[in-house]
Image (cartoon, rainbow, N blue to C red; front, side, top):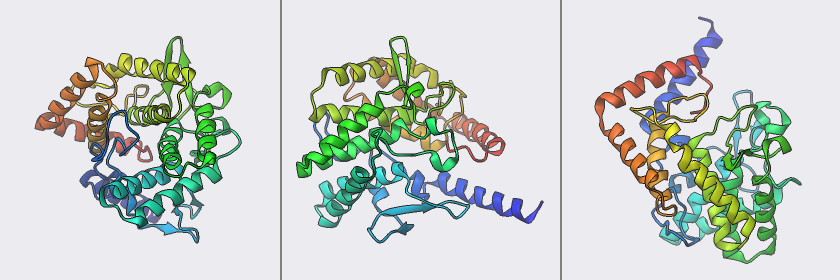
Length: 316
């Protein structure tokens, strides 16, 4: 094995170990938000408070950034949105002004760095084709940030940013957007591509953003769009059930890691409070049973381990 390969695999195994035991910043356990209240723009759906504690690089304006393995510095919008939502919930829980300021600082960055299409380049640094640079998850979590920023500040610029973000959210992938329309079905794609491969957690986070938007802005077209994608999610939720664990996505059928399986369970806990459909609670109960079954858990870990060795750079 070459020195380069040794360093690569050492880094990978260290990353996977931290991901598995919940010590990775990017894979902290995300239970349901402690201040989440259905039908109110209060706490976030998932507990992002741990995301407020960033130990990486910070620029002169106080905005966190990532340094890729090739040395390139990027501002990753999903990470920033989650950090902002962590500050928001910490502020609601603890009342510290530094968390309020941290939230507004990132919300301002999102507003100021939104492009003419209404989005944020999420996957451009991965050298994907330009038409696939956006992410429904980014659009949704940015909406969750900026609706709260508008509620807090009453700054009309946040209202405009929200409406521009929603415009892009509804665009099809063929029109450089993030949606796949198939008859009456609407799929919100975290990682748009040539074929539908809808990531479950990304779809739900995207849907949460549309829900937050509708709490502030009444719009019949957006309401219809929201109802369509909710109906599609309940219709296709069974596709994410592997019979002993949950799938990360419903195209390539990659098994979820323990982190994402637990995230699916907590997302469904929040989702069933805003969507009245029996499949959500029943699927959540099934996935909890899988998690509590040691044989299923062992099988899932083994299958996932093989999958990671075959696709070491996959994010799930």
